[in-house]
Length: 452
Image (cartoon, rainbow, N blue to C red; front, side, top):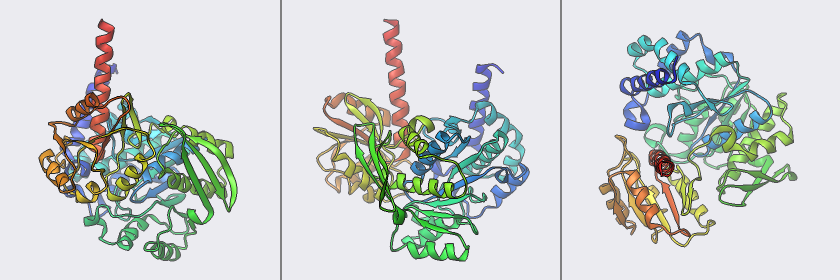
């Protein structure tokens, strides 16, 4: 098949998925399913692909995507053919499904959509259910050694929860999607704990008094060995530059890793690395061959090995344009704390939120002395920029309204001086549009330069 024909068929396949299937990231609650019936029927039609490869299952409120990418990078360094399923995507649907950092081929996406088209029209599954089924089918057919599977929302009723993983991993628990998962931390933890399987090890990333009893009870009921990462490991991350950190790790009080380097920045990655390393130790305990050198090699190039988007990602350097997908109160608090460790004379914030979350929970953490550029992400869930500005004014945050994220980014970059910092944040969709817009601008500038 010619590249042009492949591209046309791929676009048509994605158009079919968007037009036929409800997508939570775009339309919100109406895409949420309250049972696993569809994913079981899809899997049955595909020959139960999730039973044909080993896996690690990761749930949590914040950090699960980072833990998934870190764990994947380490397993790749150890020589394992590693699948990675994450969501949502930023620029291309294929980002959700990778093997050793390489996205699923366009040809496979087209073939899969064609193969299950009639079943899709009959079942009317969600976009997420189809993407999970596609990932499992792809991993099964590709002969991987192991897959890292990130839940989408929750755990118990998440479409990924038909796998029987080697290890279940749960990162920290915070308030997000409370209309689906519950309005207390124990209720949310109980939903996340739904990924715990009988007699399979469980790694808990963070000890929280409200959630610890929930995990202990579920693990006891399932006779699942329970491993609290913080009881055994302590990790410290120190920023070396805008794009690198130094990592020190203590295991049972003894120094394990000394000034290892990682291409991840952000103080919260200490917790994520701690959780990923606890997972690696459980794998070692169960016979997986992963050396200390391979652990350090994986940490050194998490972004490079897995094509990790959207967290503390540097989009430009003069001025520095930083994009981060923090989209709930805990994530935003950590992000704003991190900015204090980055030298800048003035902060310019391009932001857009979704309209089904409490804006105050995010806006309360924004600094009042920043210049704001309000925009609506180009999705149905996007909060109108005028409404966002009104909410922001209640927190003494002032700025202008722009017709698009692209226009807001251009204005912020043009107004920021070289020693100042432009931050894009508020939602994954705002960050995705910023990444795409700046890539397009850079390509256009290169084209003009070449013509000149």
